[in-house]
Length: 152
Image (cartoon, rainbow, N blue to C red; front, side, top):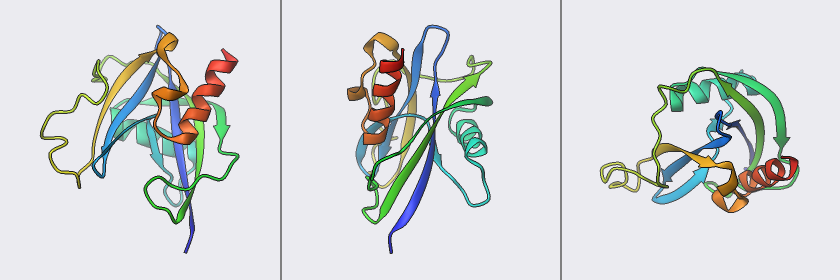
């Protein structure tokens, strides 16, 4: 049975106009994506994104304006029976001083990627001038980056 999988992602820019991205190790593969995750039953999209940011980054954030909702058919990269609907919002964080980030893409410890059945996540900032749709791994994230760069 095919299902809809609703995902909610955030666009967090710092004062230097760097974008926060998540480098992830999922099922033995490496992905760069925007921070966020899956909507849970009984949860609104903004509440979902605030929860995901707190869980993943430790940051307490305010959810800003809506940026984009998927407007084309996209099958899940992780389950070919699910159609993905992704919703993107601007995210504002008052204090990012506690956020631990890396400099290089996929800067995992050997232990984090030793077992391909496990998942790992690290964060890094991408300078606006270096940002392109090719920075991202997932098709909908690529569309969002293209929109952001076009609108800037």
